[in-house]
Each structure stands twice: as C-alpha cells, then as structure tokens.
Image: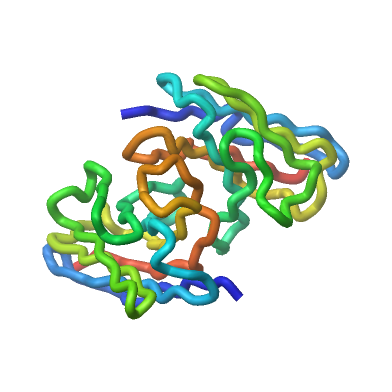
Length: 123
Length: 107
C-alpha cells in the first residue's frame, strides 16, 4: 500500500522551531520529488516547499523562504521540514505529498498525500 | 507569480445534477493544471492532472478541459460522495499555488 505518514507537529511558542517528518512506504521513494502543503484551519491549500528526487533542487513559497528548510533522506524513505522562527501565521495542518515526477518543477501533480500533522503556534 | 481564481466559490446541487467549476490563471500555464477533491477532515485527493487526464480509480463522471488560462472541471452526475471542496492547482512554474476552492454542498 502506498502511504505517507507525517509526524512532529504540536504546539510551539512564537519564534521557536519545529521539525516535521514524513515516512513513505509502498513506492520507490527516491524516484519522485516530494512536497509540503499546508492548510490553515478553515482555509484553502498553500504549497510550502518542494524537493527533487536527489535533493538537487528545492523551492519555497515566499511566505516561508529563509525560515523553512526542506530535506530528504532517501536511505530512510523520509522527507523533512525544518521550521524556524515560527509565527501564528504558520498555524496549519501540514501535509506531505508525492509528486508524479522526479523533479519538483517538472509539471507534475501531487498524486499521493499523507493525512497531515497539525502545527499550532501560540504563546 | 501566477494567480488562480475559481468560480463559483460555492454551489448547492442535488444528486444527479451536472456541475461545472471553472479555474482561471493570471497568465498562460499551457495544460499544466491539476484538480483535487477534499472532504472535511481528510487529505486532498488528486482528481485530474494535466488539465484532462484522470488518474486510475477516479470515476469517469469527472472530466476536465481547457488550456492556456481557462480550465473547467465537470461532474456529469453528482453522487453523494462528491459533496466536497474542489481545488485547482497550476504546475507550470513555482510557486505552485492552489485556487481558493469551490465548495459543493447538498441543495
């Protein structure tokens, strides 16, 4: 079964850091680009970041550039999102998603999604 | 950056109805437009990619069309499980914004 499972969410104070993980199974992880997408409570979907199959190319939304870092460990079939300098505007469900292409800017689609992990930023 | 708009933002329909949702891009994105379906409390699900291609397992009552800046998602005969929010997304260039969504609920 193709599966993505996120973890690492929780309640964090403004200005602090958090690291999200996404464990992949059921497909050849290092054949595909991966992404993080977030959804604030009651709001729409926002693409956060993407990374190509070999980590050679990464991209970020302007809203997180310079604060968030995406990475992957193909040996562990895992995707990560290091989030620094968190603010209330970062409060959201964070989904990891598999791209249908090896490179994140390859005109693909997000064909597999995890169930998400909630990040709440509050004092 | 490319912006996406969707219309309508919401609609009420009955089982068996034909439903059409449109997505417009602020500049040409060729055919690089995807559609997703999301039900409350669940992750989004890929419904259509590259404007008109259905992934395996998606019912044939769903169809997509368009190119350039104007795209359409059509559900030919609405089923109870289709009441959800639908998002378009462009994969032409980064960032990869989603449209604001169209909520389809029961009339």
